[in-house]
Length: 441
Image (cartoon, rainbow, N blue to C red):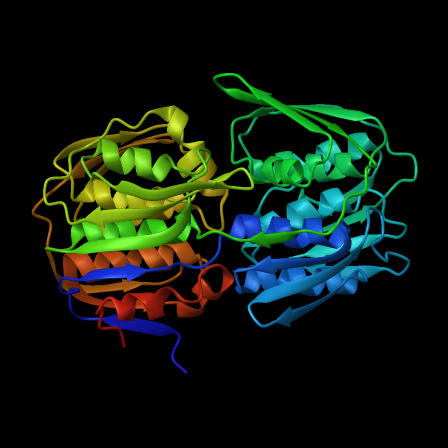
């Protein structure tokens, strides 16, 4: 079976209603919290991607059973500190930084040494941002060069900590929060603003967590060692998955798209704020609050007069996973778009800032980079007619998806490798594109 797809024609106009897969961040958090609840939890619309399946397989290795029943997953938990860690266990996180970092927080009381491994891409990423605070709790963690594999042995004498999270990483913050659940006393966290799904989930479970915020930071207090009961949860649509279809519609001709039931948590809507500042006019409809999360349908129409943006730095953390597709929108906008302080992009599944710049230059877009700031010189008349090959991007699913959107909106004949990369986060991506009329071989 070939490892690439071919796109030779732009997508024709469409007017459709779609649903995208369940939010990956919330799916993984739901599975992990259900593993610590007492009783049988039901999770609906769980994202069935490799990252989430690896999470399910890992909790089973730790003694937690799960099964799929009709349209939900049932997970049978036995309470806090009920993982079976009597034997040395190896947990494979695959490509999921979310699972790898969060599960370390839940293993701070493990009886024996547990090893977390991952694929080549994940094994290049920095884990000191998580291992450092977990050591302060009292756990013993070992790794070479602060990368996977990471070995963790827990402690029976955990102590609460005061922690300052400076990176704006929800994974780091959440790992500390989950460790605090296992720890007696009150753990206090000051964190640079990032997505807050973990806090909202804990609040919906009536756990003793207090939160407040200032302009740049969130403040969290968690009282540990409080068991909680099983729960039901319906995972909303993933805005990161949604973002590719937003830009597809904006850059297509005479098209309209409604995307149902999307999570528009304010810590995740940087993509919407940025595109609307670029004159996109994406509308929200049927808004509701579900267990603390804001949910909405999103309606987007073609836009031939996108304008450039001087992107505010405070939107970076809430759009961190969407910048590649934002770069593509900027390439078609009128004027020069500026983005600053994007160093965190190079710490993702691939060096996304480096790859994004290389990609834009490949399609004829002028880009100037100064350290981690870039300027993109947009061209509203950008059209492609040559042949383009995308490969060697560390199987990063977002690079693959951005390449597909470029091929379908700008033209040219494309060969895009590593089609299986989408299995980690968005297996239905190509199927939905074809539903909209895309010709993909």
